[in-house]
Image (cartoon, rainbow, N blue to C red; front, side, top):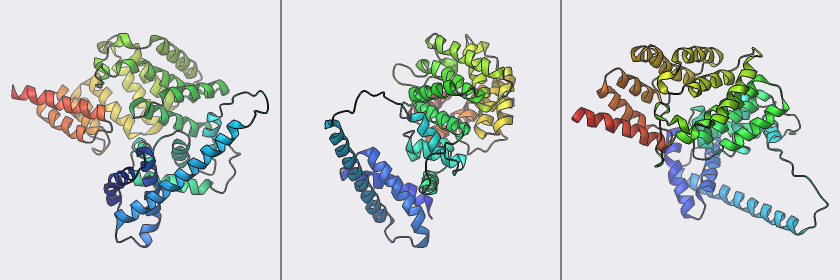
Length: 381
């Protein structure tokens, strides 16, 4: 199976479907389904014309979905003209759907991927980016999850930890991605916190509130990304910060630390600083040490390197960074920042440009490109 070929053909096939009349989102979904089919059947006999095969299969899947959607609308229109049986109460079962998709027959990773796709509204590409895996790999994982649950009854809910992971990833995608899902993630986490006395539910809610409180200052009037150190802190939502801190403190008193509580503690320390100079980086490093102990996450280790660079100097931060895989997303951006602080603008400019080429979003790419241009202009002057 040539995953590189699949990635190369994907945008071309999407474009062909769009020209045939499919909207972009529907075309993207149809091509993802075709990729799943390719992963399944190509190893037994790859087609002579891979692009033609993908176009044919994707178009057929698009038509299947379009017909199903038309049938659904027709059923809804019939229902609308029928008299209501009597007064009723609107029921929001979204959170229950999250629990049902986190089915015990699935591994936690597969349950999260399936729920994000089926209920969370994220595309396969967005989910793959969140998991740091190729898109075709994630499409295959989701397909396997669908096959696993195809013959089971969704009457046995999954566990809280899996649902928390889904809500966390939905929030992250809404916070920094293309679709605004932040409000929905916070709403559902509030519901979950009201239903259970779980310290990690409280930790996740606190984390969401503290991050969301800083959101108004994350971008400038022109849409440019504003780094934390440069944000206008008067624009932070102090009410959400106070609520997040209260929720976090109540969770920490239970003395059952989890990763979301640790992340929320780091966010609280940032929110507590009136200026960037007042940030307690030493304590932030200590919390990152806890987070790494709990998760061994490469992303946590990357963020820890930044904190070490602030607490102990850029050389110490670069030493911590040297222990990590350079292929890690945003590794080059962190290295650029630390090299600039260490007085090496030539290396920093090169790394900022390298980081811009692999940035996961347009605002981040533009920010890194401007950083590289700023340093290059200084070097020429």
